Image 1: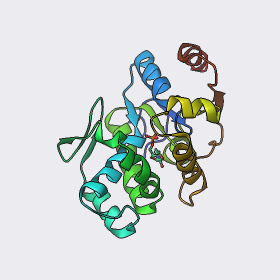
Image 2 (image 1 turned 60 degrees about the horizontal axis):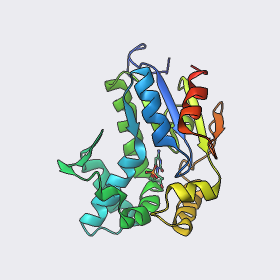
Image 3 (image 1 turned 90 degrees about the vertical axis):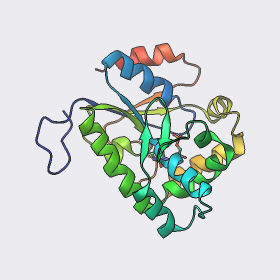
Image 4 (image 1 turned 90 degrees about the horizontal axis):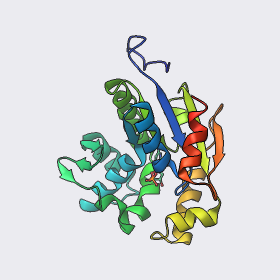
Length: 213
Ligand code: DC
């Protein structure tokens, strides 16, 4: 049982599975399969940071303008499910566009944006009575007491192949920024199980993870 956020009664949070790792490691495939097997909802927290980056671009706000982007993050209503919406606009495809890929790491390095998103992620888990949550800091910061923490990885070549539309150089740059930023960098959380998905089928990875539950 994951400890509920301050102020929440014990027992109000169900099972939480935290999945972290770099881009293209296989987090989305694994989190979808686990959510289906366990009857839980899935939250893609990367989509939340992407939504804020999209919002900045759409409003002509410089993604590096700390205060402006932090205030945008506080006021934007973001809904992440099968579709992603921001203030009622469907941005599911728009948040995967190259301009968002380029801006999102700067937005995600903004401490105030992170504080807003982390609070919403914790509330989402309370509202959904647990869930499979994927991102970069889920096991380390958002849910350090998760029932299971997984760190997925794969070789740089394989990850670049899976995200070929982004290009290997841009992907490597984004991963570098995400791993070296001061605020909640991507890292292996204490107690996380590490899986290298290089050359493995998604079915084999899911099967292995299910043996840990
Ligand atoms: O998972 P993704 O590639 O869609 O994530 C987009 C960006 O968001 C990624 O470059 C890093 C950032 N991110 C983050 O900082 N923390 C999270 N929990 C999830 C994503």
